[in-house]
Length: 144
Image (tube, rainbow, N blue to C red; front, top):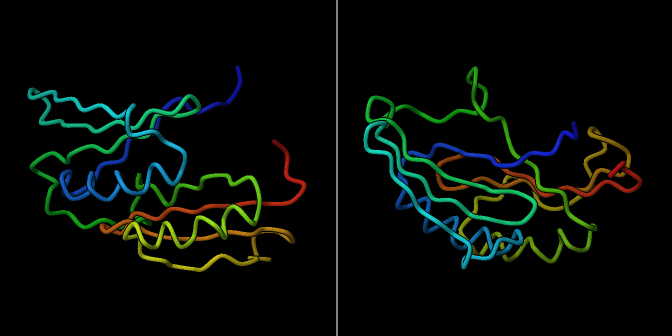
């Protein structure tokens, strides 16, 4: 088996607000909004917005009503700490940085080298409006 991720689904607090943000963000990350889909499973209190790319499906989900007021924190057991998207170069990260900022992302750490993660580790860290953390990363000479 090849360890390739098929899809990622992230639960957000407010699906409508999150959808507006992700509609701005996902094209920056290479997703075509013409390939966006929505679905509902009423029996499970579940709504989903899916963004399709040939390499990955990224989706945002509504919370169950019992959890809708819970706080989001990446250090809770079972929580997503952060999700990193691989860039093709440092230049690509630098070019995408102002677009991600203009999309409404909260910039946590600007594009630069982060030697604590590796000698040539270059990244941008940002969060969506609910505090879910993302990263764009490029590391010279890294496998794959």
